[in-house]
Amino acid sequence: MKKKNRVSSKDVAREAGVSQATVSYVLNDVKHIKIRPETRQAVWDAVKKLNYHPSHIARGMRLNKSMSVGVISDRSVANYNFMKTLEGIKVGLAKFNYSITLLYDTSEEHFPRELISYYKSNRLDGFIFAFALLDESIKEELDNKKIPYVIIDSHAHGRGSHEVGTDYLNHLPTLTAVFKKKGAKKLAYFGPRRENETDPRIEAYLDALKGNALHNSGIHLCSFNDDEIQVMAHKILLQSESPQGILAGTPRFGFHVLKAAAKLGIDVPGKLSVACLGTSAFHGLCHPSMTAVELPLFEMGRTGAEMLANLMNDQEGEELIVLPSEIVMRESL
Image 1 (tube, rainbow, N blue to C red):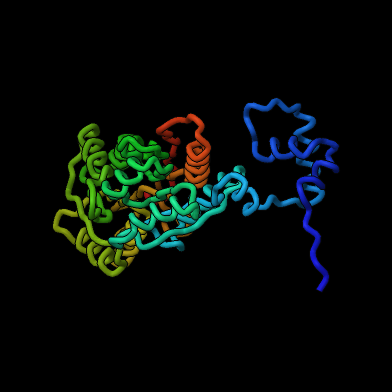
Image 2 (tube, rainbow, N blue to C red):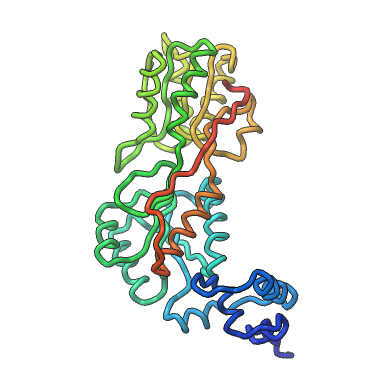
């Protein structure tokens, strides 16, 4: 078999008419080296023409790094929110020539030790916790050993870590005001049960109701099991004094409310208004289509990746970044 010739940075330098060092500066986006825009463009044109891909292994050996980041999540890899965020993480890390390693079993007793081991053995250079409940003991261990990590979540918790969150809870006063405008006087919250920490969605929901002089007819929580969600959705709608509006904590809970309403012959939005918190690929495909507070999932991932890259390269950056979200009005409200 004929050996495949690998394009090197030396080939890129020759094609661009620059030094090999200049190619390295451009590809690694070295900040303290001034390079003319036309020179940068010449390098990138040569990279594209030659289809050059830097060797992560060689670069990692040179820098004594793995050039890989561990991504930890409580979500399934099939989860839409996680996958869109992961896409952003991948794009954000690619700029710095980092790859991704997915980690699981966060609830296992040995997991904290594994994280430390991965870092100390140069198998991973940092960690991103994307929609993952970060146990305080793990956080303390990472902080004490000065291991770089970033938290990505819908809501920034302000725990003294580097975090990327959104302002989505700030939309609840506006959203509940729309419920009121549509004639709803009693609202209910229907969402997932959190095991390890207080759910900020509930407090924000109750505050929004007070601000709009609306009555809370109940806070209903259950696991992410579809059968349980559907049973509880029926119970909520069959109450003697059922709510005229339901705010779902996630898209899944909102979809189950629409399904239960359809089975019971309840007109949405005529008799019942529904909205949810979170993003889904199916908001526009269900009937009626779902009003939702949408999160900038891709941008959350990209921003978190860039934040971590700065930490791993000992560069100063913001500790907390809050990205804007938006209410997308559809037929359910």
